[in-house]
Image (cartoon, rainbow, N blue to C red; front, side, top):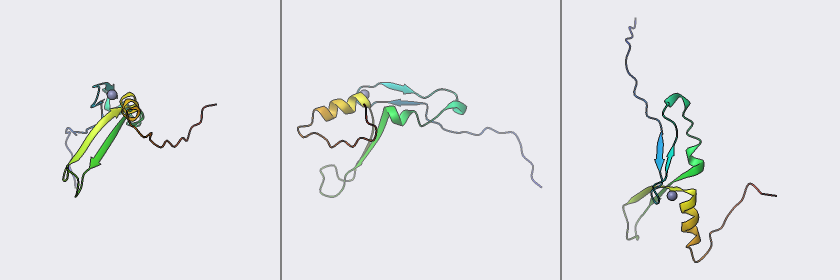
Amino acid sequence: MREYKDGTKIVQYLSLVKCNKCGKEIHNGEDEFFVTEDIIPDIVHEIKISFGYGSNLDGQTFRMDLCDECIEKLVDSFIIPVDIDRWIFND
Ligand SMILES: [Zn+2]
């Protein structure tokens, strides 16, 4: 026999992401039942870089979120352009 009591279930959900570079805030809604985590990754991108042996940053992992605009500005500052794969083509 099991007896259940009303309780509070704490559930975390993604409600806000801030771009680390420009501070832009992307809200994902305040109601956990209507949150779709699929929206944020299309606008703000989580980037994780782990540094290993031989790196000056050995033993560290950088985690950051960057918005599309900041990624474009960063990439535009590169001397050598990045390789771009396109899976949607504009006519
Ligand atoms: Zn940004």
